[in-house]
Length: 579
Image (cartoon, rainbow, N blue to C red; front, side, top):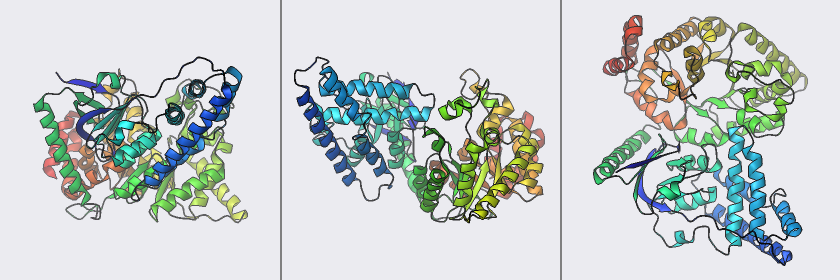
């Protein structure tokens, strides 16, 4: 009987894998018994630190030349942590003060640091505990006297295997990729961890957070890994395995065919160009955007900058980040979304000066927070303007709900420009300013917003949530989250038609834009600019190139009056037939 395990999927272009399970050995254990000679333990610790450093440096040198350059930075981060006083000096103190052996002292200090990260409310910062775990494990392996993290890998054939482990370090992932591993399954880790980012970059289907995977899965059994759904199937019968092998083969042929579209224009059969842009979560994602043929970045989320600091990032930190992405994009446009956080993230430097929220989704967040706290917002605003002198930059503001917010924003931008001019700092005086349409009020006022702004971008994730009054993270009501709800379709069409009256550009950057099932629908509604996760770009381009947009528009014109009575599937079927 087939058994299913579930976790958090981490998918790049490849989402499915079939292979035998290869269970990695667990980390070594250490006794808590005190030692008679702590000085000897200190020497053992220093020797293990040196060995771990040499091990990481060797891996760094083995990174293939065609690997994205940022991957080496993960190894650099761990090399730096080998000298971090919070880890190393504190461990030395435990050895000296409590006569502990080096392995146990390191474990105690790891537990202390991990607890600090675990108590953080922000999910990104919590994932940084993984780096502590990974570095400590590297050191402990060498303390245990084992020369390699997983010695069996030196002789075992792991090509085509699905590696199942308690956890994987970035260094493990690089080594395993070089050995031909086809997928990863781990008990720990999350989609924002360094290993997850690396797995996406290396295009290895990965499922993380699979509880008790190393106990429930058997070495050598055949596994089906679906990184899109986060599901792993084990003990499948031959017919089921054959079904997924055929599906995998079909997907590989499809991917190969899609790659041929990289240099082809994103133009429909009837000659209508459609701009396809990428959404970036982190600077490292810019490589994936280019590898999938993005025409630029339609949404760069800047929350990473705020979440990764103990105090608000400075103007120079913002600027360095934006200039780095502009350089990587090599002339392609970059749309920078201003801070889209609220107090629900429990960022200490914000919580210290603002009252707690009673409802995070409806409270002081995004543009509301930025306008209330100009000291927080101005460094980012100045940095975005300064970055515009170095390349094509657009500024985009989230969660607009009133015209007063827009007018205040535009006055603030003009003031900031005067300040920069007086200081002799360069910027693009014509840098486009845009707003995200994420609340029904903004959607209904789209024409007025379009008269004030240079472009609009429809953020479907929040627009659906607010329009249908659904918390999409609440399992009890998430079934009501329906992108094809007639109210949503009417709002999207209204936004597009309102923007057209002033010839204002309008795009879509929510998840709906990257879902190929909806591409024909969005083209039929009138959208000509879509921004999405890099892995979806070629799939959407294929549909654009295979569509007759004129026919789709005529079909939507015909269907819209009766849209309330049309089922979502019938709508999609009629559009597929029309295309």
